[in-house]
Amino acid sequence: MKKVCALLLLTCAGTSLGHAQGIEGEKWKVTNQMQMGGMSMPGQTSEICKQPGDDSVPVRTDGDCKIYDNKRIGNVQSFKMRCTGENAAEGSAQLTYLGPDHYKGKMEITAEGETMVMNYEGQKLGKCDGSEVNFVAKKMMADAERTQKQIEQQQIQRCHEMAAQANDPFFLTQCKDPADKRTYCEAVRKPENFRRLAQDERRRARISSIPNDPSNKPLTESARICGFSLEQERDSMCKLAEQKNDLNFIATECPSMAAGLAAQQCAGRRYTAINARYRSFCSEYASQQDEQQRQSRQSSGQAGRMDPTEQQAQEEQPQDQEQPQTTGDKAKGLFNKGKKALGGLFSN
Image (cartoon, rainbow, N blue to C red):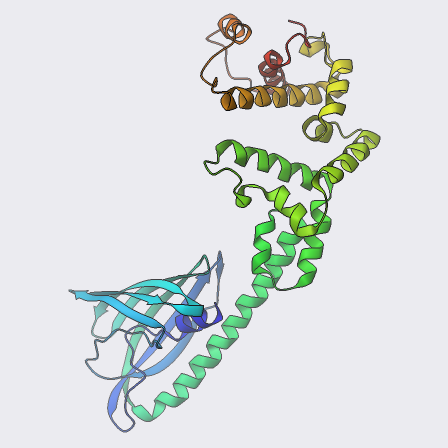
């Protein structure tokens, strides 16, 4: 990645740094700005010496990088680049010459799953001598190293933030600080993060066409990376949720506990008759049961069939019923949707 970033920063569109000392050339001011991962680097300006009439590909490459599909149509030049080996990358660029003294362009390079974009603008200033080239090249290298350090520092900060939020374990491959893993493993064992990753894993399982794909199992992978037993951690959190009366966690992550609580607080009651404290729990639990039955029907090849109870409930529901608007109405609708999955647990 570092080498690829340096390549982008050293790519001054429309310039040739190989100009021989003592040969009069054209002095150009080139401004470039990099964007990567949603971050924009400050623009950088360099003055370089370009051989008059030079229309070669404006990229310096080494043996691992090849330029191909180079073409110019009118005032637009485009080309592609491919790098192999340790710094594998794919790139493309397009330059628009707005006149003999001005051009603009953009180059994109994708490496290690990230896309970097460099925007260019060049303005001719006058004449120059090739002896300036070495000084300019050194300045550009220093600018590239400084920008690379900025990128690395922003990546470090991003890793710290994502670790604390426990968004997903797969970002850890981009983080070099061992403390990020420790922070993530502490954060993922907080009930709210554990529950969110568990729900995300179930959601991915429903829509994924690739069974057992690790990238669709953020909680399972978190347990593997952090070295804890998923079920033991869930049991421990369920006991804690019971002590703290965390009904949302119990509804989605503690099946046995949730079933007993549902029988006590939800069974045989209309939605409006349920204690307000448990309405959200009853709705969440009913929805979970409905989803489990749907998954069961899919796995048994009966996803397209509708049982008599479900069909009757659908026929009895008014066809012109408006979409619930209030939070309470939405919860009630969710509750009613899940009732059919619970058989006789709830009253009609």
